[in-house]
Figure 1 (cartoon, one colour):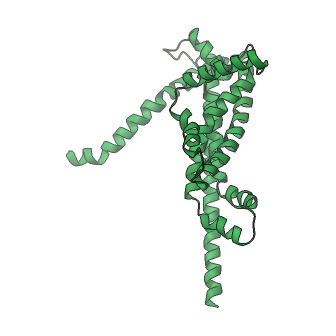
Figure 2 (spheres, helix red, strand yellow):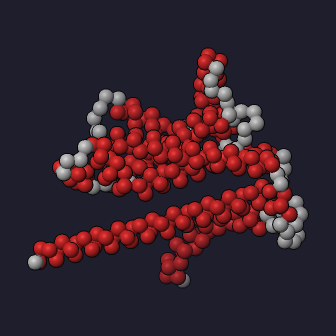
Figure 3 (cartoon, rainbow, N blue to C red):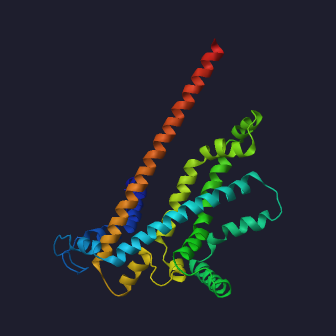
Length: 285
């Protein structure tokens, strides 16, 4: 009996953890096809809530707003994080490095409500003094970029630390200038980390509701804000349908990215093996 428990205890706990994490999602997906508004009993299969979803202008507008905001935030966060991570990894000593590193990492441990409230006060003061910016999509993008950049820096910084510096040194020995080394050697080697940082920032922005609640303006609501507003007024299976489509979309993106990374890794391994064989063959002759 003890031997059986030792053998299967890990699998049992793993099953419990996955059930705790994903069973609520399964129930939500199932009840998005429910024929009635009841959330305690499945009364029959129906697509009425998906039809209601595509006829709901608030959800549709919120989705496109979230998509535009998250895409912009992903690009800005990945770009800024690339330069910030490069400075932190390649330049170990410069005036203010500790302060810079701390400010970049601060949003990782700072509650979102504090970030949203502080940015709200900043934008209100700036609007009163300069007349800009008006609260809306732009202020949401700024707030989400500040938040997403901190996570993107961690991803890119770890890849830069593992990167072989001899590649950059070899390029410089062959006459490449620093900016050529960065764009022709460094960026291609960390491209997967930059893409991962983009996807992480995109997801954080698309999912956020706290910062968006503070920084959004009249007539500008992201999809999480719309869903949160519906949920506060009671059960609405339309949001189940919206969440199901989001889960499907995210699953496709994550699986596609994993397949691309696996194929790229295998291709790079084959190229390195072929280069080693050619080098050994040249040395043998």
